[in-house]
Length: 296
Image (cartoon, rainbow, N blue to C red; front, side):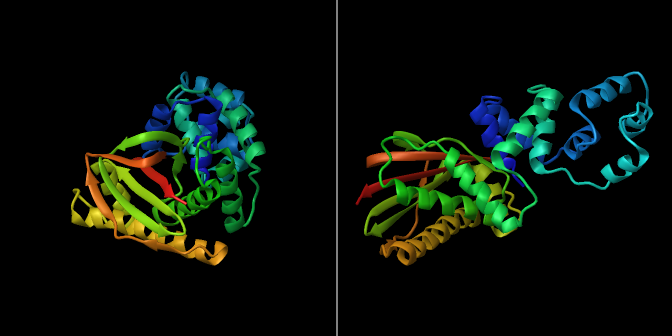
């Protein structure tokens, strides 16, 4: 939990670049937890103490826990407890950044402290915790000054983040929204929403990312980009937009109607009104969400 929020926090702080974050997220799925990171997370050791053990390990062929006990940093009981703990995803991301020498253990410790304070991470009910974190994530999201129908867009993005967590996975990090006259696409699925206002929405990604995205969505393994992958992308966008139209009708009495999804490949998506691009980074690639209010 919280990988997407910690990634966004690091981007806003200028600690990592989008490219460094993408690379770290790719590594995350195959990275094993390290004892020192667990010890810091549990509050048993400071970053400087962990660094001392790692330095000592270069001189002695001993396990981290064994050396930490010998140096007086941990008790045998604490070692046993750490062996049973799971490492939160955001701490695992931090561990990778340390391994890649983007931050030090001490810098990570300070960032984690600041992150926990800013995002108020406590032991909460999961549903309430997710709502709180999504609210915070939205509050940190940059909205262009020329954004039209801001409240409707915020409602759309709020539901989008919830649906990504629900159907694709919580290990994502959104980048800031960009205003573009047109958006070049790889493989893109778009859908018009008509009614009280007209709204274009689109989902774009490269073929490898699309294969992974579709696999997560339908919980199947795809070997190549085919009609099933394409249909999965269409289904996700149609499902999300359908839920959005229902919510807008229930909450704001706005009547919206969905047009059938359309597919575009290697073309520029453009409208008479500004296009807004919201890149969302997953460990398997970047998913681009495009939207434009065409009339109100």
